[in-house]
Image (cartoon, rainbow, N blue to C red):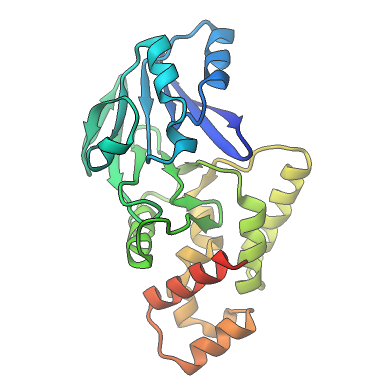
Length: 261
């Protein structure tokens, strides 16, 4: 399966999938760039996939469906908020599309009806606004516990999984990560690569899950609990020294710090 990336709005990514002569789109924020992309290649659109209901992920649904008569697929519990939905997907469902098998993963936190789309056949994950490069989504509707559990679920996928998230946030996320994990050589090296790409206006997406496990502070809470001396943020280290904290409590504190960053 081929994945094509279309930048849209300020920092969104729309992803177009192509396999066996069929085309799908994931999270079309708006329709015009998708239509232009398809028309340049003389392709039609066979299916529209949504990870969650936010307008910058579903804003193109109605126009694309009207033009291409393509069905809209989204999570059953969020169906009332996804424009023009036709097929309701369920948690843990295997959805087959041509030669691809996609498993639906319910990952609340950013919203209460967020899903990820894991194409097992191709080791590709569309994480929407839950897992970002070196970061995670804001808790607009869910709780820290929900997001923590959702990220843990995603972290169990094969490390070679290529992650396509919904936004270009890598540089800002890396800057925050370095405040906490500033001696992490993998993170330092990754930040260097991110800055080089962004100077050239290149995308930093996709990235491997293996990279995230080494550099994303929201996936490294277990490591920080076992190795508090590795934390380079003075206030966070002091807070940990003064309190016996769980992984979840540490996660919630880091998410709060990121909100204020």
